[in-house]
Length: 499
Ligand code: ADP
Image (tube, rainbow, N blue to C red; front, top):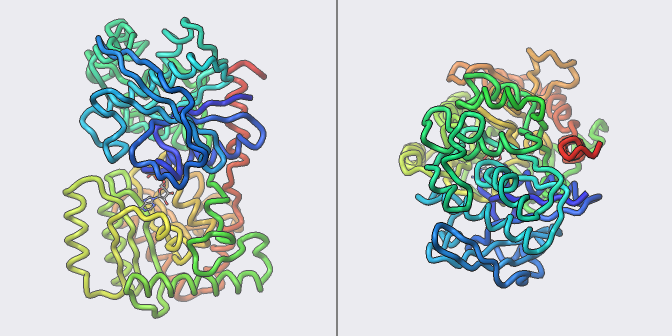
């Protein structure tokens, strides 16, 4: 099968969050047996060391936007072995030279333009993909643009599959923006097309992806159920219910070459997590984790004394429950543990709040707060931590609990979305005892955090054999992309009616 992903993120060259990991991990798994290509904007921040054999594929690709015509250049490179095309926009607004991926006032125009340029490239290059796989609002417009315009111009794809990684980000725009790209915008302001459920004069871009794609997926079975309810549907639950025959929740995997404690170059001491039933193997894992922890604590200027280490690696946004992370951090200190928070901040108020906490606790050797994005540090934290706190308000899938489980850190997670599909409470889960792998709580409040954290710390302190069993049970899970990619292939085949 010939699959083309069109996306706004791809690890490791252009990453903000899990979307980048998913496009990378899924593509790598699919590429083992299929032809896979990826199309991305040519951001100015792409790290050249990850771009092998970068060269121009198409020097001129003209795009009409409103009354203007702009030239673009299409580049290609291998990103971790994946054939990736990059669209460089030469227009006066320098759409992809902003020093960041998102967060510009004209993000909608930037990504709508990218959608058109990606389709134009496929058309002009004469490509005939079986599947166009698009991701989240930045590339959702590909679905209507293909169905209503590019398929009529001669571009042939057998099916469009749209993955919703986060339903919250829908993006709305006046219909004129579609008109400027060649779709008569006013025609799409109807309930069955792209009209926003709350603002009837606006186009809802994400909705366009849902309505026009042949197959729609989201990133966990529980999130798929949640988004079909008024509480979880962010205004689109009716559209999703109407689309349910083509909607499927497929759990994300993790890329086991990138996230493999046995070969992870960021660790001080690597450790093997396969066949861990042998007591000698467990001993080796515990020793390696301890070496990593000591090095980490030393490098972060923390006490190296043995205490339970709780960690959180996250974007600090409301979805992730930052106030609950803060609560967990203080509670951990109160109960004699250590806490490391690696959080990327996007909002000045959030940054200020955490800077304040950092200042207040600056003398405390049992805590480290790093407000940045640091891939290497993240790896070392996963390998060193005993526990990972993930108190999300909502979580479509979540990758950090999967990585934590693989690295032998026990997740403390709120039961929502993909967390509910992957973390099973030691005391209350309906799973068999030997499949339970963490501590969970139902409501996103401080009592919930206290309950999970309290039980975990108690177990760590008083019953190390039980703690090791929980760790081992988590490490035994297979969250590689193999199973998920097989599910995506089924969706590709049914969407393209290739069954
Ligand atoms: P989301 O996509 O909502 O941010 P996920 O849990 O799906 O959350 O994926 C987060 C990914 O980003 C993980 O690979 C995690 O390790 C990484 N990550 C999050 N915050 C940071 C950070 N501050 N520094 C380094 N990596 C981070």
